[in-house]
Image (cartoon, rainbow, N blue to C red; front, side):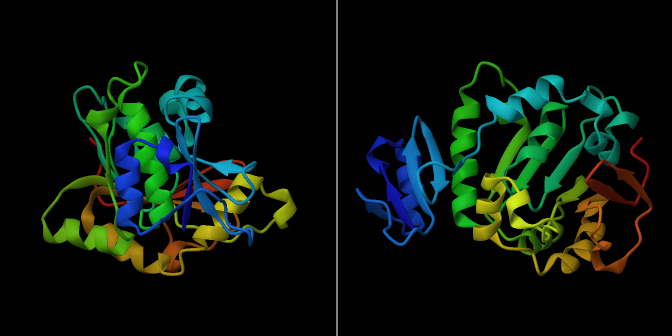
Length: 255
């Protein structure tokens, strides 16, 4: 991958790009392929320099959702079972094995969960590292470093390694990529760009049995409303939203 304006990036991002063998360049690719750029103190992925995807926990949509998203009344919070616990007394540990851009993980952390994010794609992982970098120094997120951690692994590997190490997580959260039913024109440009690069998680069905073994309390699977159950296994219960649903597989009560 080509990385432009890399000289403006902090050393942490430059070293990460070097470890991924990115090509440091003054010029963007001529074939319209995806490339990385460092602009306005952010690492971004783009094809045209106009439609950019990046991770920003301190400002923008994530910050707005933290303040006005509905707290424990949100569907994801109910699916994880946060409405059943006092997080000040009973911290909830979550491993988000398909973290993507980290939006759902950030919501759970902002509500008080301790969240481990797992992402296998190098460029997306790099965006997360950059988002973490800025969030750690934000005066609006004093809790961030205590509740959010990041791993560069495939989901299967992360779940398997955690089980072997006898790590304990109350909740395993899965949001595998699934093809959009809508025509591409109906999908937001940034999401379309994201999906073009990331593709779809064809091994998603293999994650559920691993997740069910690891989770002490429950597994939560986020799916489009039209998608089949993961591994064709019916959940214990469902939380539905306008376009998505959360399939919940309960191993034990949250309390």
